[in-house]
Structure formats: C-alpha cells, structure tokens
Image 1 (cartoon, rainbow, N blue to C red):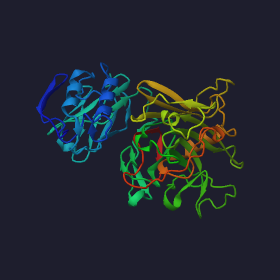
Image 2 (image 1 turned 90 degrees about the horizontal axis):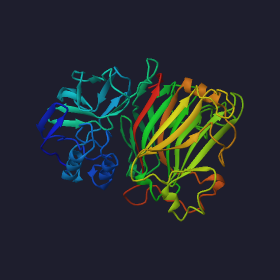
Image 3 (image 1 turned 90 degrees about the vertical axis):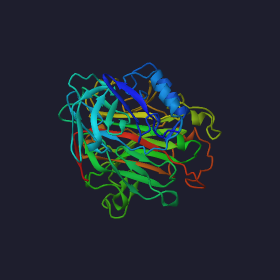
Image 4 (image 1 turned 180 degrees about the vertical axis):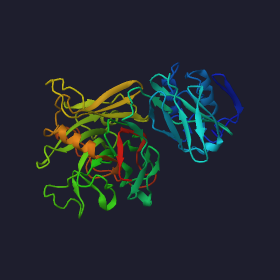
Length: 454
C-alpha cells in the first residue's frame, strides 16, 4: 500500500535518507489516489526522457529508479495527498513564484530539476526564484521538508515569452448549486472536480481576468465515459454591462441565459458573451465555440467546431461514421488527462487574406506528444460553423475581463454537424445510483495582465 516508504533518494549532490513522501503519493501520477496501471503507462510514456510528470524522484530522468519506486508503492494511496500548486505556473527565468498548499515552516530546501534554488519562507508564505540561466520547458519541483520530500504536482514551466506586462494566475473557484445528494465540486487552486458528484454542478472563478493571452488545463473525462447527453463544460463569460459582476447564482448570465433583472434592457437576450473551450456529449463528442456580437448594436453570431473521440466510434449511438466538418481525436486515451491550451493572439496574420484581425482564438488538445488543433477562428470553414463572428468584439471583451466557469449538466450536448453524428439515443441521468458520474479539470492557469472583481 502506498502509505509512505523509507528510501535513500539522491537529487544532484543532495541525498536524503528519510520516510520520503510520507504524506504524499508521488507514484500516483494521475492523482486518482491509486498507483496502478494508468500511472505505469504514464511512466513508460516518458521513459528515458526528462519528462517532469513521470520523474518520480526528481533526478532529471524517468528511468528504472522511478519504475522501482512505482512498483514498490503499487495500490491504494492511504496517505493525505495534499493539493500543492504554484502561482504563477508559467515563470520567466529569474522570476519568483509562490508555492501554495504546504506549511512553509516545514520546508528546508527547494529543488528545481534536482538543483537547489533560492527560496524564502515565513509563517504564511513560501516563495522561490527560478535561476536566470534556466531554459524553457517543464521543470520538476520538489520540496525538502522535515518529513521527507514533497513532489509538487506538475512542477512549473519556464517560459521566456513572459514579460513584465503579463502574469500567470492560478485561479480559485466558488461553487453554485449541488449535484446528487447535494454534493458540490471539490475545489482547489487550479482544480474543479465533479467526479462522483453528479449534476447539475457549476463553479466560477473568484476573479475575472483581463488581457488574456493563454489558458491551460488538464481535462479528465474518464468518469464521463458512457454517459449520453451529459455535458462537461469549460468556458468564459464576460458581462460588458458590469465587468466585475461574478456570473454565479443570481448574477449568472451567458449567451443563452437571461436571469431576471440581469441586462433587462436587452431584447435580443443576455448581453453576456460566452467562449466555450469544451462542451461534450459524455466523453464521445467535444465542441469549442465563440458566441460574440458582430457590433455592439447588432445580433449575436457564433462559430464552432466539433471533434469525436474513441468513445464515439465505439458507441452504438454514434452513426454512421465520423463526418466531414470535424476533428479526429480518437487517438487520445480517455483514461488519461488531455492537456488543453487556448490562445488569444492579437498579432496573428490571416493565412488566407494576409490581414491582421483583432484576435485569433485557437484551442489545441495534446496527449503523449500528440497535439491536435480542435478550434481555430482563422481555420478552414467547418461543416457547421454557424455565422461569421467579429474578432474585434472578442478583443473588447478580453480587455474588459472574462470569468472562468466549469460545469457538469444536462440540457445542450453537441451531436455533430446538423446532428449527423448522433442518432438520438435517450439521455442518461446525471444521478441514478452511486457512484455518480462527473469529470475533472485540473492544473488550470491563466496568462493575463490584470484581474477584475473578487
């Protein structure tokens, strides 16, 4: 059982003999509280590389030492796996970051890829500095504590693209509503977890973010497999009538929802804009959408693109076959997280016209070195993309501020171009009998230049 082990671990010139990871589960690479075949697959996927996710002992390489540790600790993790993260996750060389979720007074050393780095701590705060000589890419972060080593989930990413005008934020969230048996999502820095909760459930960030250039997250749909017409959603909301109003409870609005008293002057619907990075039909179909205005006085327009997974291909509800107008992401293993990156680029040149439109939105999914673009506002026209959209409206909303929302619900679910991928199978309930279905979004980060509200 993975309840802690005594080992001698060496990182660079530092060796520690202790009950390493006594209150952590470093071999639980996918953080489901069990060390099993899924973690082994992740380790083998990073074998003989500097993959910071599968480098369990943080010596800079995923190898036989990490495999031995994983096999030694096979089974259920009985220790307290704390949620530890850093802010910002993306850090420029020579810049500082803050570590969240651990007692600073217990930390005696901070190791970045096995090398000791400068850090400061007091009773409430632990901060450290990335060496100015650090190169770009993911880096393993390990804290040496009084009880052993604590491996920080997902480490940090060093990025030379950052400058003084932008910050990487790790958002926190608040719950709205409750799922089956009045259960709400598990929340943490950069984490919203609906697994085992059922729906409807929704969480909203505690701040809106301005000047967004990038949003990243790890999507885990493993608990949504086999669920028909259940929608796992990750999206942005802006309310130009009141940028600082959190779209939660009575303040909620989106492109298709007008709560009483909110934007009552809008005869055509709520004035809020909605940007969907992810909407799903269980784990079978995904969709990304921009809901914008063409002008401030004109009606709403939208553009979307859809993708199908291996879950769709093997599902009898999916008929007859993947259709033109979508993206094939069936190569992704739905039992493993999918890394999402959404970018908003104000300097991109349209490859077709040569013009520089105000903002280009692009969404990619990646897993195991395989990256697939699932949405590109300047990409080829899709089979069901809707009307033309105004990139200038998106630019306006980005300047004003977007809130992050994560939900698990039933009403709309994508069904393919003109409904051609899904043959009308009946809906699956969010609840039913336990364990209740759900999904998880983890390691959420936002690169922007400021915050609103909160």
